[in-house]
Length: 194
Image (cartoon, rainbow, N blue to C red; front, side):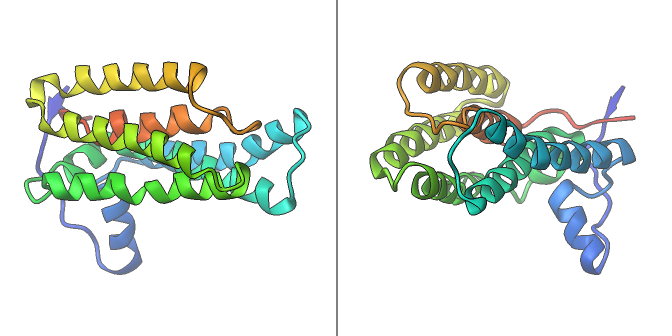
C-alpha cells in the first residue's frame, strides 16, 4: 500500500463538481460506497422510524431519509483516501475546515425545528460541543488528531446516551453526525492508493 498526496485536476462541468465533492481521482469502489450506502439508508432510516411507530408527518419522514443520506454519505466520503487528499490539501486551512463544521450547525437547527419543537438549548449544547471539539482537533499536532478526535467522539456518544435529548426515531443522528465531522472530516490521514 502506498500513499499519494497528488490528486488529478478536477474535470470540467458537472463531473468536476462531483470530483470536488468526493475527491478527484476517487476509485470506483470509493464511489460505489459513497453513493450506495447513502441510498440504502435514505430508505431504511424512514422505514425504521415507521417500524417503531413514530408519529411523524410525511415531511418528517422525508427529512429523516435526507438526513440519513447526507450523514452516511459524509461519514463514508470524508473518510476515503481520495477525499482525505482533496480536503486536506495545502489550500485547506483551519478556517476552511472550521467553516465546514460551522455550516453543519444548520443540521442541528433543522432537527431541532422539525423534531424537537425548536429546542434552541439542544442546538446550543450539541452545537457548542461540536465547535469546541472541532477547534481542539484542528489545533492539536497532526500525530494526535486521530486520538483526540476519537476521544471527543467517545465523549459525544456518552453525552448522547446519557445527557443529550434524542428525537425518537433519530437515535442514530447525533452519533453519526459527530462521527462525520469530528472523525471522518477533520482528521488528516494518509491517502492510501490501490
